[in-house]
Image: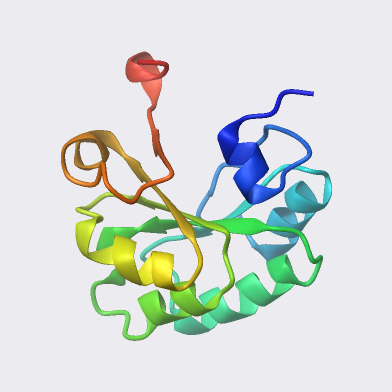
Amino acid sequence: MIATELTRRLGLRLPIIGAPMAGPGLGALTRAVSAAGGLGMLGVSNRSDAAFVREEAAIAAAGGSPFGIGLQLWAMDGQPGLFDEVCASGAALVAVSFGDPVSYVRPLHEAGALVASQGEYGRRRSRRGRACRRRRGDRAGR
């Protein structure tokens, strides 16, 4: 079995992290991926509110395995309490995207979550405090 620092830190049996798809990435799918040994990811978008995060994270957590949340930062505009629910969710990893993650890293760490960031913000702004950086497309693997 492939083991990495990240799989060890998250307690994963398989080196698989599910895509945090807003829409199909609900609590039941998140829980199923985690139960299979990977890390299921709950997708949080601009259609998500605090109640959605609370309810779907509870479904994901009910399996007792680590899970994560993919948080589109721009989705928090006009969504009071959304970030507080992400912090309170018990997510082992929060992958932040579509915005500057710097001001969110500390509260997520204080909540016990590892933080992953994506793209230019991940490279330039949040080197300290992130667990990993995601890349997509032709930049993957660099």
